[in-house]
Length: 324
Image (cartoon, rainbow, N blue to C red; front, side, top):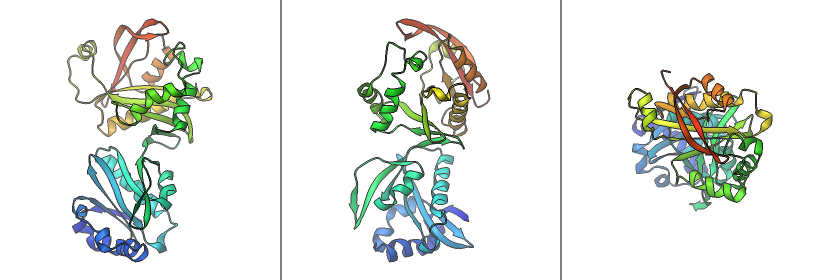
């Protein structure tokens, strides 16, 4: 299969070939509903098999990315063409700098988009005669084993956090054993982050589709001593990371190292960050070794910076850049 991106004027003949059959003839939309003024400003996609146009989609950036007009000719369904179209569109958006990706799915197609990493983010509504539901793409980055997805505003994800952060073995390293978090506290702490009311982007780590931990990333304010230790060099997009593996069965198996490498590559290769900081407490030698394996180098020690189990602890500030 061949996929082409272009403008509406460049691909109009082939776009009309697919849309007229899928949306007008098959689903009963009018031409005025299928074609609109937004087409001229959208990035259009057409998929071909043996030079025949068989699928289409479009996307446009308006504060967030919006994907729409996804359709595959009836006789070519069941061949995973829709999956390939969506993956190609997501990769294209990532190459353009990424960002939030939204779409409005026909209700009967909700499961298709969920399998691709989208989740429902609003109420079902009627458009024309067809029920639709708004959805958001939750996957930040992934490889064959690990997926880092955005945390969702749902009981399941809040329960993960409360289960992990009420375990004293986890709390010894993250948060403190004197600061356990129950379900209500998890909702109060993480809902603002999930809903975009915080600069922190909270994510769940999955290994082979099993939730195993938490990671967050955020635009960082570089502290004066750290800036001085960097030799005064200015960075335009400094980011910070925090994480833990919450499932003890996945400790000491290299999962944490693999997760850090994955998110670091994502942030640096997509030019989201030009330097990434992480700040383990100086006594946490295991974490420091993990970060060193991922390319982080020590920058400075900030004394008595973090309150942990009733005592202010020193933090080792470590950093990695694209040229580290």
